[in-house]
Amino acid sequence: MTERPFAVVSGGGTGGHVFCALAIARSIGALGHEPETIELVGSRRGQEALLLAGQGFPFTLLPGRGIVRRVDAASLWANLGAVSGLVRASLREVVDLARRRPRVVVSVGGYASFPADAAAVALGVPLVLVTIDAVPGAVHRLFAKRAVANAVAFPGTGLPRSVVTGVAVRPEIIGVDRSEQAAARARNALELPADRKVVGVMGGSLGARRVNMAALGLAERWRGRKDRALYHVTGRRDAAQVRHDASARGLASCTSGSPSPPASSAPSAGGAAHWGDGLCYRMVEFEDHVARLYEAVDVMVCRAGASTVAELAVAGVPSVLVPLPGAPGDHQTANARALVDAGAALLVPDADCDPDRLATMLDDLCDDAERLRQMGEAARAIGRPDAADRIGELVVAHAR
Image 1 (cartoon, rainbow, N blue to C red):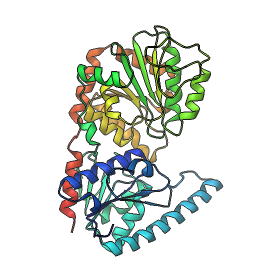
Image 2 (image 1 turned 120 degrees about the horizontal axis):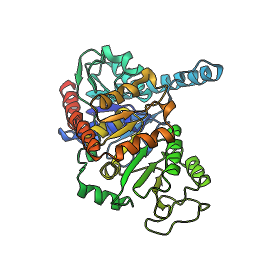
Image 3 (image 1 turned 90 degrees about the vertical axis):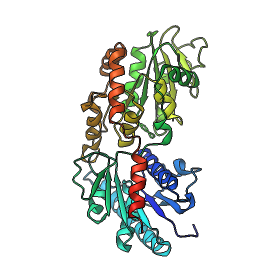
Image 4 (image 1 turned 180 degrees about the horizontal axis):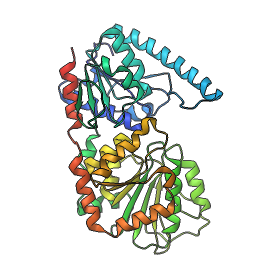
């Protein structure tokens, strides 16, 4: 970037943080600022390189990694390396921001936000924090008092100068259509049957081992079900292992509508599996068209990251949420409570997420169309489709 940037949007490490950063960047652009004046800053170790490429905004990836929250020799050594990387990245950002002087720095959180946030505070550049979880992370707690504004997803965070905006979601999520006609189109595109209850399972962009294993067990239990379809998004990190485990369990995949292969067949890349007239099971590594999946499913099973919870609410999708154990401040459980308390979701602790528990809960839901309808309406009632716009306006108002 050769001209003075209007905004630097920092943060990442997870898909949710990156999607939020992109939504905010697009909102700032819609308020009259050219994409080349909006720079995204993230981590080399996260998913930023994959998710930011081709999005139309310049981006910088810095060294560094998150702190390991364990007390042992290996973790201590890893944390020394993490701190060293963050210090190097922060010094680089101080030099970079001092040279180019952006009018505002926006932080969506995560360890990847630390360098730009620290540089903004050091140089007196206005800093706007966007806290997407119900419990603020360590970086935002550190810089909250120095920020000119704190955009928060939930009330009661305790951050000063806070404005409840919700979580910025991708534009395509706002346009999700939960009508029967849209569901039929989405199912056709995803190679799913139009006349069955469809359950989606998604542990996150990287994956969730417990959720993936429960999904495989669920597929085994539903093997003979003629009224069920299971669309399983494994995540990139777990894809190879889940594919291997699926093959070992006889969960073979084939093209939609073709005869059922023998149990010993190896799964192909994607495709729908039919157990004769039984379960339609489809496994994919990553779903590029999440909005289409939200249109296709009757209910989702997933982690309770802030972006996921926000997307489920905006799209109006009933869900079973399995919060990540050990998340800092147990923030995923707090995130999930927003949907659970509204009657839009059920909560299953990670330790209890097994095939039997999922089968019982999902059978009850799938057999009660009216309950699913009410859960979807409850979800949409608390969704904030205008969150990105509100955050963008807040950022522009504090730029100088």
